[in-house]
Image (cartoon, rainbow, N blue to C red):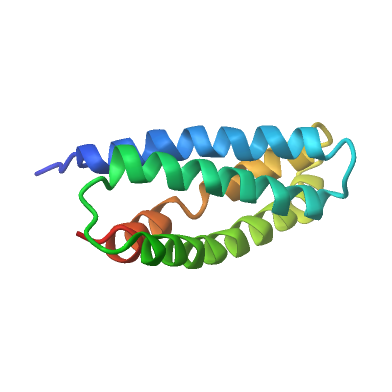
Length: 134
């Protein structure tokens, strides 16, 4: 059996994504003190998005040959799809799955963290082929 290890680029993408996800989830927790859950998720996503773009451009896809404005536009497009996935999963888990499992401890935080993890693969493919194509 031949096991293929992830590329170093994908590992860097995961590390950058982990940091951006921490910014996303951490800022959502802070924003939730003043804003409704959905609004806090959307604003936190924007903060994570800016973090992710800057770090991906420098550390992951630094060989990109397309123009900066194309990188930004594709990055936003790929992440609009991701925010839809994040929001859907967050709401389903927080409002349906965790209550069904009788979980009543930080449901929104758990749900949001799961929602942020879901689009990792689709985002990597989109950014590699569209946002930062070489």
